[in-house]
Length: 348
Image (cartoon, rainbow, N blue to C red; front, side, top):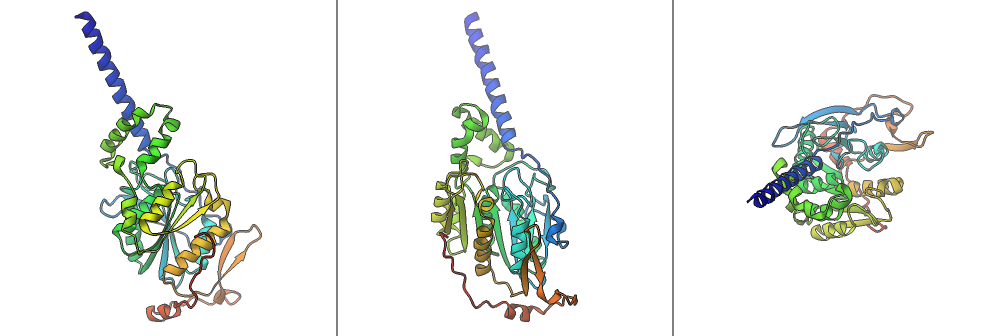
């Protein structure tokens, strides 16, 4: 009898330790590491960056963002970062130069802090399940300012969030994802042992505990189904060929599901496509949005300042300093008809 009691106590202790372990892993797994955004560089000349706040759609969680408005623009682009990042650092590097390029093409830009990140309200990570509401809240913010055409550039988890948001919001007219995963469980299964130093058999319990903590079924979280809802919607999937965290097979699966354009770069890090070739990235992504979002032709030039940062300059203001005048909506739309279609000659 004493031996049986010892076995029972040992089994109970082991179970309690296992439960404590998987709950701890789930807590760590769903708690973002908060990184605060750095101010936009003064060299950009973008004093127009405004700090704005708005609620996520449906749950009213408070989000913070930077908003830069381009005069006469009817199109706007939302930038959404990945896990443990923040606005301005969406692509594992300073993205203000890319923002300046978008402005030079005639777009307004909104850089958001997803829930639990940057200056936005605290929340658990759900890897796109609820973060999509943040992007939908950003869409509502832009709709309230009269934007008819909206594009989204999402990085990693932000890309998954963008896919899900676009599947529920037809006003998102063009989507670009960079290093997004197709199925969360596949990524966790491949990375769990490396990230936690624990055996793979702990993964199922940790995923179940994470689902309890978040209220979301994370084990079955996949962007592939949402991509099928985007067939016919302009979508560009970007991925580094040798991404060690999210294998390139995820990009192929997403592109096939959504009949999307696919651009595979020769990078060897997660989210390395932008930092490995900023000019080409800006040309391809900017051209994609320019083709698929109807924006008026604003007379902008792009000049390089002494440190090499792109600066957008409105030509009518150069040397004359005349006040900017807003055109009525009809004339702006007529001015915005573009004669040349974008032709991507690279691997897109």
